[in-house]
Image 1: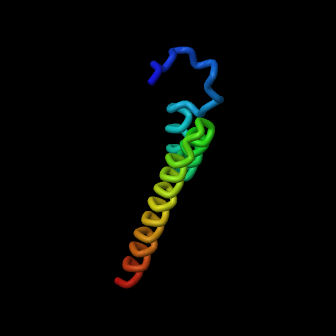
Image 2: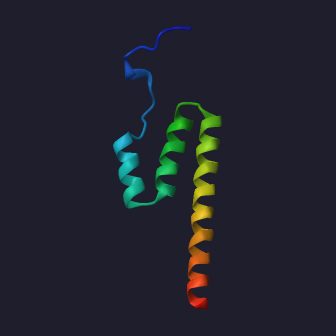
Image 3: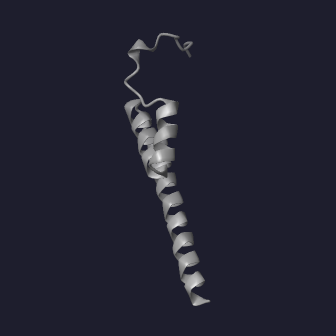
Length: 77
């Protein structure tokens, strides 16, 4: 196995950690998940991209279910 080089010229353009953080904060977890998935796809890491996309979807669905249940049970009182 060869040592990784410190020259980043052969890397495709990627979203930086700061831009992913700002997008997640200002947008949502969907924006951050999209950017991370795009980074993995640009690097050719299809399996990691699938995991991030499914994880992002799962977190959004869980958040949606909890939010809807909270609203529903709040109106029952």
